Image 1 (cartoon, one colour):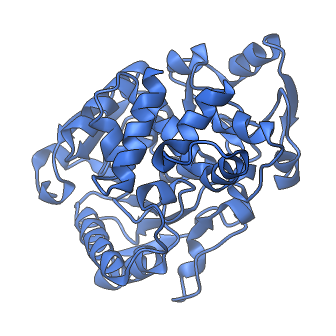
Image 2 (cartoon, one colour):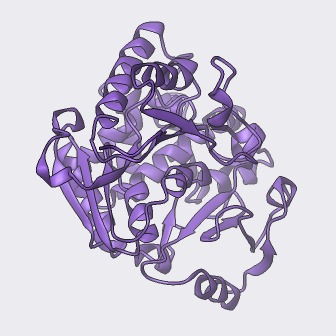
Length: 392
């Protein structure tokens, strides 16, 4: 009951505007913050259906804020999916997003992970040929993603948080769209890389895996609690090439001698989160972000992007958000290109990806977008900057 009580407290805090879900989770003192955050997020993911289920059953009328978690306790289930399945109702594009699991190649091989799951009674369906394969995935079946060779795909309801391979750091629970930034940055082993806004650390661990733990990752985040949790995640994942710093990236000097070899930067700044299926948890009952909030976020994002492009040895930068708002995506990218004219250009980001950037400026088609409806992933935006010529 400790987990459910902690989740209920976080949800109540969000409802009463005490803070964001993520912030309240990290401040809760609960030992397993990832497990707690997963429960909170999944509760909100099915909030509309849960409310309908509870209303129809006449449960918990006096405790509206605690309905989802107490309903699970009352029904004797541990996950929102189980409660929904008990009522025979599950709908919406977000509910169709599969469970993506990245194999941590610092600790194991994709083939070994596949063999392990097969020994556990899962049916391996081979490499996916398209989105239809993902949509029809069900039961104890899984696929290898068509694009990313280290990404396994399970049905949406699959819970991996207690799986021994996840707890040992052999598996990383990471949405496919969230895997794209590190994949597109593609730093080779031996590179010097900056992860500008690094916590909670999944992308950082992915960078380290691509680099085979060879080289250096400078990871910055200004939140001490998030950074401490990130350190635990990276240690579990076997990352040894990363240097963590509790620092605002905007205060990091491009002329600092420590970063003179940095040729790759991943910038995934704070954003509205409008592409996340859990966004309603962060701002319950509210519509799209206000113009004022978007302007403030976009201003910060543009400053961070232009700051990153000022590093003298930089050759490639990936800018990404989990937002669907043009103000945080295409508008920021266009403004940064204008300010760095003649120095950086957009590189095509996975040209075969089905959803491209909004046609707000000529090169926007080089960017990519993702969303549950068109790509069966979380909502995401990615742009790849590359230097037009070598710095002198």
